[in-house]
Image 1 (cartoon, rainbow, N blue to C red):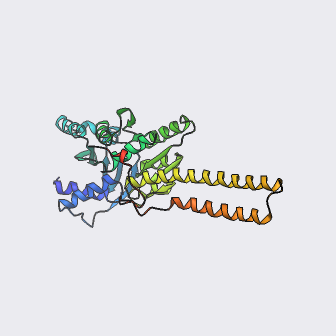
Image 2 (image 1 turned 60 degrees about the vertical axis):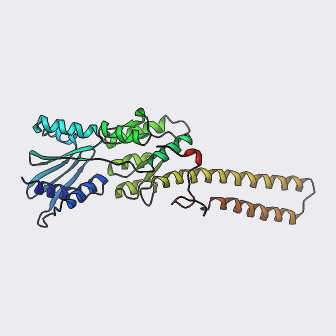
Image 3 (image 1 turned 60 degrees about the horizontal axis):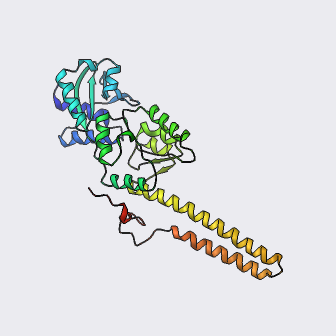
Length: 312
């Protein structure tokens, strides 16, 4: 089978997906000037959680996914030792390796390597300074996960790889149960992240991710800029502080007025003036949360503290 035909089938299978790896594969076929025959159509296109996808093209069963999928259907053993060595070298370099089979023959394998976002290391470092524990959950192989995790500044014990959706769900459940008074925030962008996003105390979906992830999350960022995640967390902390300040001030003002009233030293107008004054002060205090125009960052009201800069 010609390589162009293999790439055509690969693009046809991956095109319905919004997963970043699927988008990368489709774009790669376009870069090679490979176009999908309009007469071809995928029937019974199904997602297999944590493994890949399967469909029917022209009466042929086509599977695209990771080694777990092909080991389960007993096709992985048909790969030659040379190809196994190549795939292992790709994994060690930090790539995500996948395969495609047509009927019962594996016809190609591919490697897609994730690139950590430029701001990832700064954001992870900032979370550490804030006392927030960061754990990486991924379905990628161990080598790829370690390469990306170390690049963004995570310790090896905080990198958990080769996870199925249920395993991600179990880990989030475990963190919630063993986290005392702390809350668990889950960030994801794929279909496999949806169950964990739903059960986390706060689920955050990336704007460029899968629709199911957005539907099950509590918050959806408008794009995939991780600085907006840090900004949201800080804004939440500031909001809690302002709420506590306003409640405390309001009770204190009421208590003082009541004390003067019982002592016969306050009039009705004094009580009204105090109430209106407290309302204005509380409102002005809440306005501290409005975005600042002084930020030099591309995010309104957001900039890293000087002591949070990370040297490469």
